[in-house]
Structures are given as C-alpha cells and as structure tokens.
Length: 235
Picture 1 (cartoon, rainbow, N blue to C red):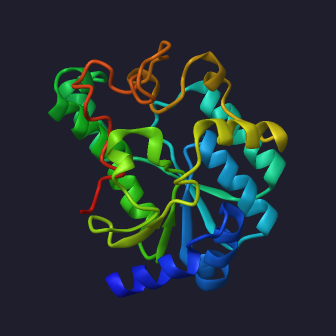
Picture 2: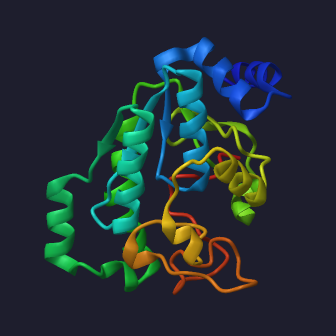
C-alpha cells in the first residue's frame, strides 16, 4: 500500500486543488468519496467537484445535533450545485441506549463519555459511509490544528483501511475565504460570527481573537487535543 501512496504522491504533487481532483476522478471515478460537513473548506471542494463534473461520490454525516445554520447551507448547496449528497445517520438503537443510560448531555461528563457520543454519532456512521471506496477526500488543512499539521496531503488511514487525500492541505484560511468570496460559494453564516470550526451545536462555541482555530470545539476539555476521532494521524 505504501508503494501505491508514493506513486499517487508523485502523480498529484505540484497540482493545484482543481487539477488534483480532476486526476483523482480520472484514476478512481466513483470509487472516490468526499465527506462534507459544509465547512468553509468543504464548500470549496464541492464547488471544484461541480466544476469538474466529477464522478466522486458526496456524503455527509447528520449527527442529529447540528446547528440550524448547517442545514441551511446544506440545502443551499443542493440547490446551487445539483449534486446528490448522501446523508448517513447514527444507529438508532445505539443512540437510544446512550440517551436511556446517560441522558442527552453525557458528553459534558468526561472525555470518555464525549468520545462515546462522537463514536456513535460520527465515527461509526462514517465507517459505513466510506466502506468499499478506495479514496477518501477531505477538506483538512495543515494549519487547522497541531495534530493536522503533522499529517500529509496523502496518507493511509489504518482505522478505515482507505487512502485519504486532502486537496486543500497547504491552503491558508485567508485563501479559502478569498476563494469563497470570488466564486460566490454559499457557506455557513456562523463563520461570520466567530465560528471557524463548526460541529455539533452543544459542542461548539464561537472563539475570541487570539484563540486557537479549534478552541471552540469541546472547549471544556484539554486544549491540546481537539479531534473527535474521524481524523487521526496514522503514523
């Protein structure tokens, strides 16, 4: 597998994001999947996939705890780009068991309880969503967190047994925002209210000037780790 990843790196190295997505489409077609949470970066990638008339499949996770504004931009994205986005949901029995035992806000109790909720609402549905695909495209950028800065723009995801590619890996937030504005791409209005990173409503708050990009996610926990488990370093 490492040889295949190195070959892909050679093929994609030096391409801009649109060219990279075009090459992925030519090589993998509908065997590539893009997971969108309708964040700034994801909206850029959706726009590029639409321009390319790509065969890449689009999926999203509806945790059941999203902001109303997230549903708004989801709907606008469908209206503008006319590309199907398949939604995946948590297992009903797992959610019922969690809420029956610990209530609707157990994620505030401990890191372990929060990770249990993330697993049920995000990680397990994601595993179902990307199962059987060869390539998983994401909107990850290197400067989003210390954890992500250690990733590479192409990597092997051991937990999901899939190759991950991050076309915007070396983009800055300013470049993303400029691209959105220049191409009139719809985005979540919460980004204009101090929410650079948007997840589930109970677990996301606005940040203040000088705070880390992901400081608004699970703000009651240790500030050094801001991941739910979807994107872990495979090294």
